[in-house]
Image 1 (tube, rainbow, N blue to C red):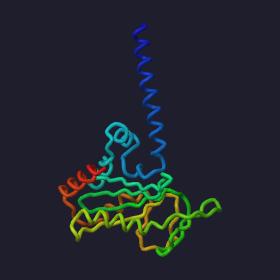
Image 2: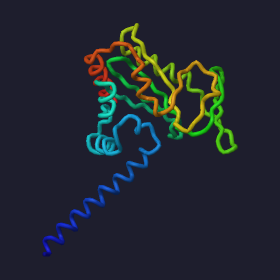
Image 3: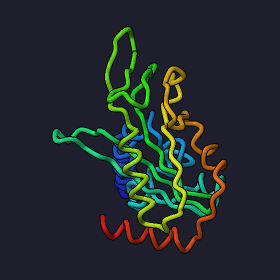
Length: 204
């Protein structure tokens, strides 16, 4: 009997540890772009916590086939996130997604240094991402042949409004990520994707 009690206690402790870790990871998952890239929190959790490899998604594999995912974040001097990119390579193209996480209504144009975010009767400034997107796209293109096409898209949270933005940048909501990928029609070989991804991960 005591052995069973010890066994149940051991399982309970493992379950508690698992739940505790899962809650901590979930706090960095909810409301983020990860929900549109991975099939579920469970897939994200195991790839993030145990495999340490978020470069392949079961959901994207189903939707667009062979692919690789590259995450890039840029911090300021105070170590705060300023720019967040998700670049997805697949056989129909390369797409650089610039991720905007703040919720609200956006206004501005391509020549403005800052865009204006309105929320709860307050206004905030965010850096116009145009220059940073161009720089990131140019870097990606420099790793391929000169004529390689690299598309880009600014992704806003689903409950944000960007209709008043006057920009030539392609804009979409989080849930439209796979739609944007499916619209691409540029051929990229699996070998090119794999070799380039290996090169980047070695640099990191």
